[in-house]
Length: 347
Ligand code: PEP
Ligand code: MN
Image (cartoon, rainbow, N blue to C red):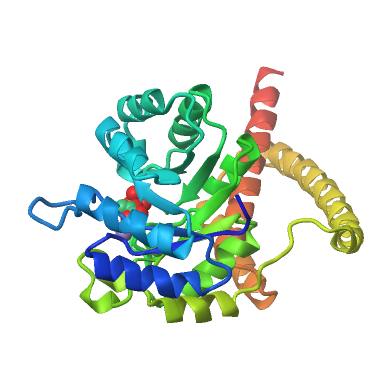
């Protein structure tokens, strides 16, 4: 597989003409190295368009053969796998709704046992890193060696501009635990065209191994996910606008070495400052005990936190970062003061 892996194509294969026209245009974009098309669509509500099934596979195979692009589709059942293999599908992806169910994943791993096909495993809809890892492990144990994780965002209960909240820390944690490439399905993260560019750039900045992007010859008329699909021409400009960063080169490594050593020095200073702060905190504990004052004074703490957030803002620091850091420090400080008080009580 060539990386960065750029998989493009419609959410759903709708007609022979739609997939052929889209595929022909995509094949002219050098960076695109795989054609996607949904054949069986997992829909939230019944009576919506559920994909063309086997007829769609005939068209998808034709589009792949004509353009030379390898083809990918979603499978959710052993019957889907059997049909996809019959029509020479090169890569199968397991959708977010299937990955949540270990029984379904195991069934798919069992029918694919020993196969050479590429399997892409989307993250489950819930932000559950172990469930995602577990699904990949089921395929690994079934002897599949060409595995790719696909980050497509997570269902989230808070207001958000995204269709599926990215929670970038989860794919990063996956990369630390498993040695599989991770690509980013920006279309299902964003849910709309406007967010695609910055989200794609962010994915690449965070060392994503590729992108999955829904492309349709006529996005407004798409039968599924119309708001997030783009034309092949729009994909071309999107890809042109992106900075594909190198993960590792000699020069970059050398330049990074001095910056990394600066970071190490700053971390060591931070640790010494923290230790000093805890020391002072213990002394305050002694004083409070002696003078019968409570450990926590909420009003003072709220004032201090607001001041730190304001000062942090002037220094260009994100307010959530300042809040998280000082809340952790404050908790540790309360624990230290309580220990001091406890100790004095026994004496
Ligand atoms: C899709 O890729 O068309 C799809 C349904 O994706 P997901 O499983 O990520 O929702
Ligand atoms: Mn879709």
